[in-house]
Image 1 (spheres, rainbow, N blue to C red):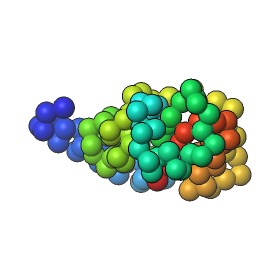
Image 2 (image 1 turned 90 degrees about the horizontal axis):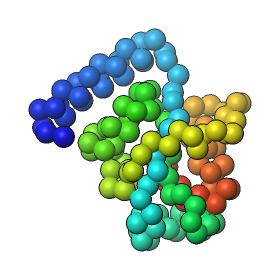
Image 3 (image 1 turned 135 degrees about the vertical axis):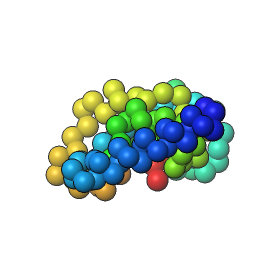
Image 4 (image 1 turned 90 degrees about the vertical axis):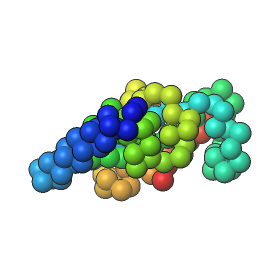
Length: 127
């Protein structure tokens, strides 16, 4: 993405975030599939001792933005975590199916989703 286009997108995202915050809009969980090359990263691998070979590697996050916008932000490097920026492949909202975040606060939902996915053998990173 060229600098001018990126700057314009950032202004759009900031405006959307301000409007969502004023409406006290809830947060959105999202999952990004990561390239399996991320498993060569020692820190990532250490966080996932129960990883089952062949299962997906993912990044889990929560945002006030729409998940598609947040994915674009990661890919462009705007407020991006290292793993989705360097290894991000696609948004994988289907991996949320079956997760019950009921009873968790927003802050707890992200961790609960990460734990739920790890319990299934996925390699997961969350900040």
